[in-house]
Image (cartoon, rainbow, N blue to C red; front, side, top):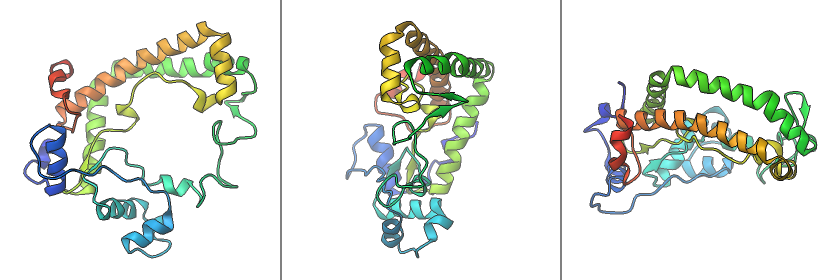
Length: 240
């Protein structure tokens, strides 16, 4: 399996500091986590790049910034997020969502304007799609494990030896969640109160998918030799 084992003996000082801290080994110094900044002109100026460089190479400039800022460890790698923001956050012309000021919310042809619309979208669209996702993941957990490990390896190669990449993406974050980000606060929580049996089924289905996603994620972390939180070593046998 392609994993972090290939980087053994190549880690730089800052990456080793992050590794040792996660493993709860004695260290000299305190590792710095990633610093997410959305101000593109500042990112360019701080790293010595020219105006416009960020749009041309967001990954390269963002990585230069993390290194210049002294980061040792990055889990959430989001170099393209600044491209979705204006100088003062979400501005005119920026696509708005249910929680960022959308005037009208239409999902898969269903206008979300009531708690009943939330229920309709869950039943007609979300549940069938999620069930298909469950069935696919049930049939290819080993493939998913390999994919997760490979994607981390690819980013780590891009980072180089002195900055440690840790798991973070959706593949490593499988947990049931409140859906207000999709439907908006008012309509979702009214549905939550008025139709508890629907919300209960939604949570149960999310949990079924989460079990499979987390199993694949745990196996990818262990088999791929990826960074894991302190104390996770005791659970390694569950992921083998």
